[in-house]
Image (cartoon, rainbow, N blue to C red; front, side):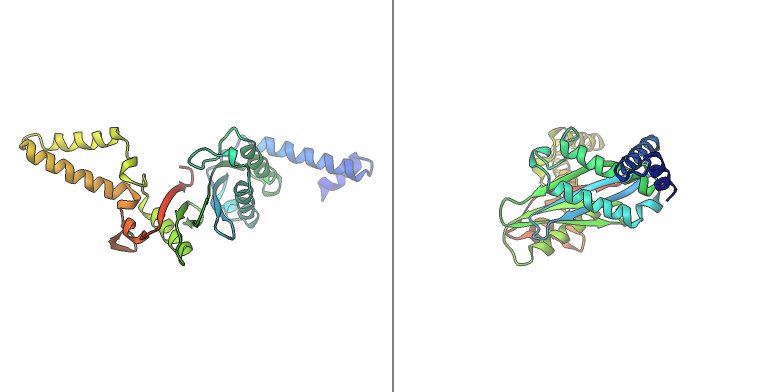
Amino acid sequence: MMDCKKALQESSGDLEQAVQILRKKGIAKAEKKSQRDTHEGLISAYIAPDESKGALVEINCETDFVARNETFVGLTQKVGELISNGDLSAFDDQGGLKEDSDLFAAATAMTKEAVPTLGENLTFIRATRFDLSGAGSVGAYIHLGGKIGVLAQINGSHDDVGSIVKEISIHIAAAQPSFLTRDEVPEEVLQQEREVVIAQSANKPQQIVDKIVLGKLEKYYSEVCLLEQSFVKDPDVKIKDLLGDLSIVRFVRFQLGG
């Protein structure tokens, strides 16, 4: 109220000029706070009502108190919707929002506008968006009150595809796969795994070493490749078997500050 009164006095009662004065003061306050560290925040998801597209966003703040504030939670949803409806040219081949895009700038501006209201420095960190091009579903899962978030896309027709993508997202949050398939694992990573096994099996015959290497690589695939992993809710079932005729196209897992 005091700020409003002072603005009206400065503008000699001109309402439009008073609004401009208040806006400038808000920007100035935001700039003062922009140097403060932001280690808390939220990962939030926005999914279109028809599940044809969705976005995962991370916005940071200074304290856990603000991270749990309804205004801040609402901000993350608004930014998620902005990202979900933005120009597709703003995203890279993996669906990540480009930092040099106008959409990234717009999300940053929307975030900074809330600084005067919340009284803390706020930082828009990153976003990923997935869009369907046919039948399927884009789904998400938020874990630990916004500390971890997953966005996943499944293609194909199924009555429960929405439920399946949610279950897969929950699995990804818990199992933390690094790759979708074994074909995505870089050769240099596999070579490092081979070298470790060979070093541990130095005195064994080559034929035995080869079998050990093969077994270790299979175990490695089952740990880091989503389709090779055992479903967290039923370890006897592989993710690739759970899908049936459906296919996981891509996924992303955000961890706050990660």
